[in-house]
Image 1 (cartoon, rainbow, N blue to C red):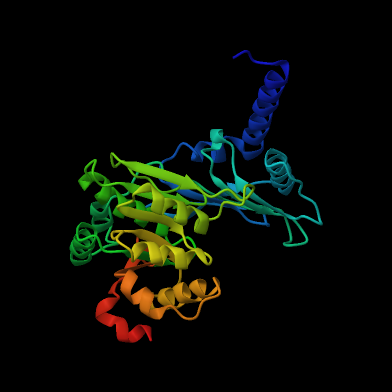
Image 2 (spheres, rainbow, N blue to C red):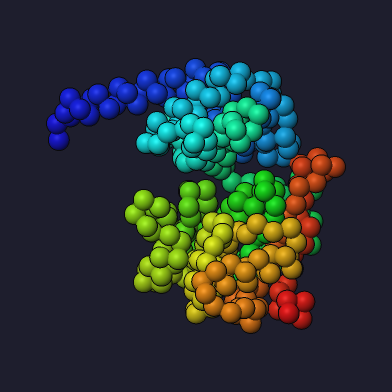
Length: 323
C-alpha cells in the first residue's frame, strides 16, 4: 500500500507533537517512562512534581513551570481531538504509544490554582507474589492462601483506595494464573485501558470504546460467547458489576476484578450499589455466591514499600457480615 502525502503529513505532525511533549516534560520526567518501577507521575498546581515507584512509594523530583504544564495539556487535548479551555478545563485519555499509552488526567484553572496532571503508567514488569512477601507487603500465610485461592479457581475481588496498588496486585495474581495455565484454559480480559498483563497461552483481551458505545457490560455479554474459563476485569465502576457477577456465577470461576473501597465490607457494599445502578434490587445473595475472596490493599506511610495487604477476606465464611 502506498503512503499518501496526507499520511506523511500526519506522521510528521505526530512526530512534532511527541518531540514537543518530551521537550515540555524535560529529560528527567521523560526518563521516568523508561523506569519499569514507576507507576505514577504527578505535577501539582504549585509546580511540584512527584513520582511513585513500586517498593519505595512517593518521592519529590523537583518542579515544572505552570506554563509548561498548560502547554502539555494543550498538546494532549489536540492529540485526543478535543480542546482545553476555561469552559472545558479537564483533559483525560491515553497518551501516545511513545509514552506507553499511559493514562493521562489533567486540569487547568478555575478547577485549581494552577494547571496540573497525573500520569498513570502501565505495568512494564510483573511484581510477583513472592516479591510481595520479600517486601513485607504480604505475609507468608497470606501468600499461601492466595496461591490456593487462584489454584482452586476462586473469584477474587481486589479492593483498595486510590493509588493503593490494586492493578499491580491483580497482575501478581494473574502471574500465577499465567504460569499454571495450559492451552485448554481460555482467559478473557476486559479493561477500559490496557493495564492487566497475562502471558498464558490462550488469552483474549478486550478494551471498552466510548466513541463506539461499547462499555464493559456489552463486552461482558460478548465474552460469554468466547468460551471463557476465567474472566478477568479491570476496575469495576458502574452497573457492569451485575453482568460480571452473573458471568462469574454461571460456570466461569477463577475471575479477578478490582474495586475502589477502603475495607472488605465496604467493597461488598459498593459492589451491591453498583449492581443496583442496573435498575435491580439489592444483589447481596448473588454477591455472596459469586465472590469468594476480597483481597484488601492499603497505603501505609510507615511501611518501607508504602503499602500493605490488610485483609484476605473469605466472603462465604463471613457471609453474615454482608447482610
